[in-house]
Structure formats: structure tokens, C-alpha cells
Length: 497
Image (cartoon, rainbow, N blue to C red; front, side, top):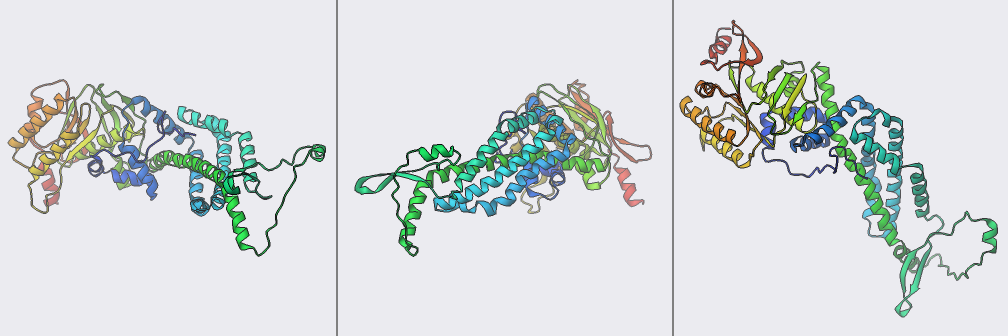
């Protein structure tokens, strides 16, 4: 049985290698805050969310497949949480029930496997009841296929047959084994036989010819004889013990996969619940192919900031169709870095099939997201800030590929403006030639102005809002670069207060 709730044609691989830039993305985009909100203290949910978000999808159809499943989860939250509890119960019972399967003796393996399988079948029966009761409320292709599989493969006949086999494997009336005589009259070809059926008509049992019975009774204190009989029993049930253990393992793997794949959606439900408490909007994004340049949204906000402040935060409305480069300039502390983080967070959330923090959102997928943010000064004083920035840029260049996206935040400002602008100009031009989308926050007027003067249709210029009295609106608007970042406003706010 396959789950197929994260991919339409395969199960999720929790061991898939994460992209090399993952830790930079987590640090620069404040993603630990989002992951913690999804996990709500559950380390397993934290790891599943991290693995799913940072192994992004690039196929819009696969993204829409997940979006439909997540929409079902939001519409049927209590049912999904009840389904998630099925594998949780299995885990809670596994340790005490499964230990015997690691026994060296077939008898111990079989006993523990039967006991564990009985518990698993009971959980499958609970799942079947949930599915039968609520399947009609789910509309997504993923859930409909999953429920259809449960109803077809776990029907009443299945449970009756499994129950019959488990009762037989208890061997309450002893074990029936056949064997042949081998060389030296030693037993060979031991085969476990099905016990004689007790539901045949009594007349048939009465007139049936009975095979002659030759019996031998072990004396009560004959320990050697008892051990010999036990060894014969183990040889007879060895193959069956392994088969039952494998069956239990198969069901257990199914529930483990279900827990992992549902765990991502449980994390999404946890996050949506917290954002709803702050009256923040969420939206399912429209995703376009990588070569269809688009970035258009209403009310886009930084999710991590809202979670940290425990309140609704300011969102932005931007329409950037057919744009390869977006410059963000303007007043200090005007929300430029916050906006950049909101763009990065939304891109990653959109490409793993999640909702985003916005009223509406449309963007093309990218084949990799990268960040180049300012870092603290090297405490060891082994290299300067510009050296460190260029070294990180070199690593990114080795990994980045066409139709990726990169977010720059005050990059290459560790030298004078003339040199920093020239370095940034050459890097930006090289990236644009490789069809890489760029968002660039900068205070370097010379850099932004040089691109503004080119009047290129694929470049958009945004400026952080500022009121006439110096107050920040934290809104970004389309606007040409200005030669000042209004640092005096910050000075007055600190020293004249």
C-alpha cells in the first residue's frame, strides 16, 4: 500500500539530501521561527517540515497536487488529526510489542509478530472506520485515491481473513508439522501444516478414513526431550515466523510513511492556526513555470515577524510581471529587509505546496533559492568583510543554475560605494545573462541609479515609504532611487529623543 499524499507517483523520502544552501536560507529568512510554529514542540514535525520545505518542487502540477490536499486538510482539520493519531498509536505500542521479533528463536519471533500484527490490524480497522465516515468530504485527487485504496484493500473480507489467520497462528491446539526422513533417518523438509478443519459436517468426520496415529509422550521432567520437541517446533514454524514478521513490518512501514506525509500537513495546520489567531491572511499561490517571469501579490507579509511579534504586521502589494531584477532602495529601517525575507519565505512555502502569508500571491517557480545577506564581522579577524562576502558569493556561483532566484541584502557594501557598486554591477549582469531572477536591497545609490538610467523593461525599482515627518510606513512603492537613505531620521529618533 502506498500513501502518495506528498507526491502523485511516489512516497516521500525523509532521507533525501537537503540543498547545500539550506542553513543559509534558514538563518537569513528566519525560518526556524516558522518551523517551530509548525512543530509546536514536536521534533519529528520540525524535521518533516524542514525536509519538505527545503526539498522544493519545481513542477507546478505537483505543487497544485499538494495544495489541493492541504486545502482538504484545512476544511477537515479534525478528521486529518484523527488520521494522524493512528500511526502515533502504533509507535506508542511498537517498542513493547515488537521486541520479541528480534529474538533468535522462531517461536519468539512468531509470537511477537502475531501480537504486533493484531495491534496493527486493529489500528487499520480504526482507519477504515474514519475513511468510511468522512471520505465524501474530501475533494483532492490525493485524498480520494488514498481513501479509495483503503476501502478497496481493507474491506470486511480482508479483516475476516486476517483475523482467521491470526487465530490459527496462535496454535492454541498445538502445531501440526510434517517432515521426511533424510540421511541417517534424520528429519528433513519440515513443513507447517494447516490444522484439521473443525467446520466439516460431523457425518463426514465420522465416516472419513483416519490415518494411523503413532504418538510419543515426553515425561514431565525430561528437559532434554522438551528442548528437542521445542527445536522441532521451531524448525517447522521458521518460515511462517519470518513471513508474519515481514507482514507486520509491511503494515508498520505503511503507517510510518503515513505519519511522515501527514506530519507535513499537520505542521501546516499548526501554522495556519497561529496566523489565524493574529488575523493574518493566508492564500494558496498561483505557480507558473520557471521561464514565465512573474511576481505579483497583495498583502504579502513576513510570516516569521508576525509569529515573533504575536500580532498582525504590515503587508505589501507589488506587481512585477516579466521582471528579472527588482531593486529595493529607500529609507533606513523602512522595511526593506523585512520585505526581502517575506519574498523568500513565500517562495519556499509556495514551492512545497503550502499556503503563503498574503491575501493573494502569484510567482514562477525557481530552480533553487539563494540568499546573500550581510554577516557579522569575523571575530577571529582572519579575513575582512568584503573577502567573506566574495567567498560566499563564489560558493553560490558554483551551485546556482538558470531560472534560480537570489536575494541580496546590502551586499558588497563593505568597501567604498564606487568599488562596491562596480562589484555588484558585474555580478548582477552575469547572473542576468544566466537567466537568474534577482531581488537586491541596497543603499548604494550609484549602483541602483546606474541600472535605473538604462531604463530596461525587465527591471523594477521599489522604494521604502517615508512620511514627511520621517515616520516609516513599512510599505514599499514603485519609485526611483534617491541619493539619501534618510539616516538623519534614525539619528534624530535616537539622539534627540
